Length: 72
Image 1 (cartoon, rainbow, N blue to C red):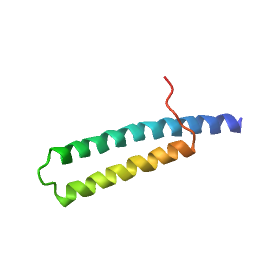
Image 2: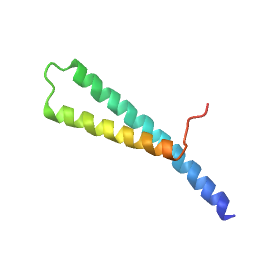
Image 3: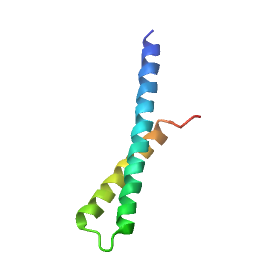
Image 4: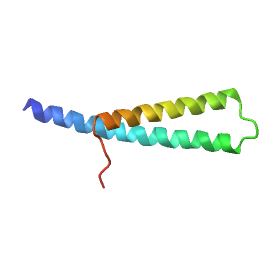
């Protein structure tokens, strides 16, 4: 009975992780597009890009460690 709850929690966490991963990927891509279109990007924009990249890569690493993958 405890293992079912653990599996359910793990599946819920994995689903949440994938949703966050997609959100941060979109944010990272959006920040990259802003910089690509900028003539002279400010330090704040470059800082925001680096933060978005770090968040995405951290969650990607966490998904790989947990063996989480997208199934269709």
